[in-house]
Image (cartoon, rainbow, N blue to C red; front, side, top):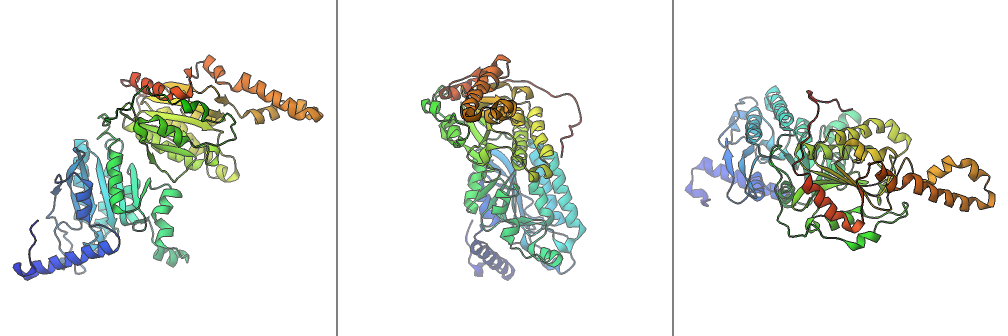
Length: 515
C-alpha cells in the first residue's frame, strides 16, 4: 500500500485516515492487534481475498446516517493457511465497536455459506460489543442467522473461534457452537450479561475477568479450549490446530512429514508405570514419548485435568488422544471430564480422526455434589459418544480400569477396534483392596493378629483370578497383552490396518443423547 501524505488527499479522506490511525493506536494500547493485522498474520502472505469490502449499513436512525463506513465493522473473505483454503471473518472493533448489524451479519453468513458449500474451515476472529442497539431486531435477526449456519456447518467443516476482545450477549452463542475456542489473556472477555447488568439486577459486583475472562473459561466453565498470551500466539495456535484437521468431513486429515520410525520402541516404558495403583505418574510423558517427534497439541489443557485430550500423529496420521491423568484426582472420571471427553470424541468421529485412548482410572468420582450435579446423565454422554463413534479406535489399558470407567474408556464392549493392555494392568469391578474388604469381610474379621497377612494374601489371589488382564484376554475383551516398550509399534500397525475401515450406524434422523 502506498503511503499518502494527508495534504495529498481531500479533507474528508484525510479525516477518515486520521481517525483510522487513532483507532488503531487505541487497539495497540489495549494490547490488541487491528482486524486487518490479525487477518494478515493468520493467513499465508498475500493470500487473502476480501469479499463485501464496500458493504455499508442501512440504518438512518439515531444519527447512524453520518456513520456509514465501508465494510460496516467486519472483514470477510478467504485465503490459505499452509496452502489450504479457509474462510474467515474478523470483527473490526475500531468501527462502531465491532457491533453486529443486519448487513454485518449478512456478510458473515455469506462467508459461512461459502465455507460449507466448498468444504473449507471457517474461522471467526471475534472482537465486538454485541448487537448494534440502533438497529434493534434487525441485529438480533442477524445473530439468529449466524447461529443457524453454525449448526448446519457442525460436523461438516471445522469451525474455530478466537475471542480477541469483548464478546458479549448474543454474540457469545455463535462461538459456543463452534468446535474450538481460543481466548487471549487480559484482553478477551465472553459473557451473556456484563458486570454492570449483574450489579444492577443482582447487586453483585464482579470484574470482567472474574465473569468471563480467559482464565474462567479455560479452567472453570470449559467453554474455551485454548488460552494464548497475545494475539500473535492465538493466531499461531489456530494455524497449529488446523495442521491436524481435515478441511471437511469427507477429506482426510493432512499427513505429516515425520521421519520418526514407526517401529521405534521405548525400553524405559517397561518400568515407568508404577505397579502400585496408589502411586501417580504423568501420563503426558507417555504420550509425548509415543507420538511422532513428541509433538502433542493438548486441548482443554487447564479444564478437567484428570482427563487429557489432544491431537498428535502416529506414522504421520493425525489422531485424537484421550488419557486418564493419575496425577490429578487419581485420574477419576467426573462431570467435567465426562463433558470434556464427550465433546472431543464426537469431534474426532465427525471428522474421521482415529481415536487412541490410554486408560488408568479408578472409576467415577463419588460424592453428593457429583450425584446432584447429574454424574449419571453426564457420564452417559461419554458412553454415548464412544458407542456412536465409527472411526478407527485403539485402546491401551496402562494400569487400572475399574467399574463403569472401564466400559466408558473405549472398551471392547463399545466396539473399539483394537484393545490392548500392559502386563500389570488391572481390569475389574473395583480395586483389589476394596474388593477383598467386601468379599472376605468375615475372614478378615476373625483374622485377629494375622489380619495384614491374610488380607495381603487375598489381594494377591483376587488380582490373579479376577483383575489380571489375562482373564480379560481369555474372553476376547483384550486383543493383546503387550510390553510397554512396544506401544508405539502396536499403535502404528493397528492404525495402518484400520485405515480403510467402513462402519455405519442404523438409519435414523439422529439419536437422543442425554442432554
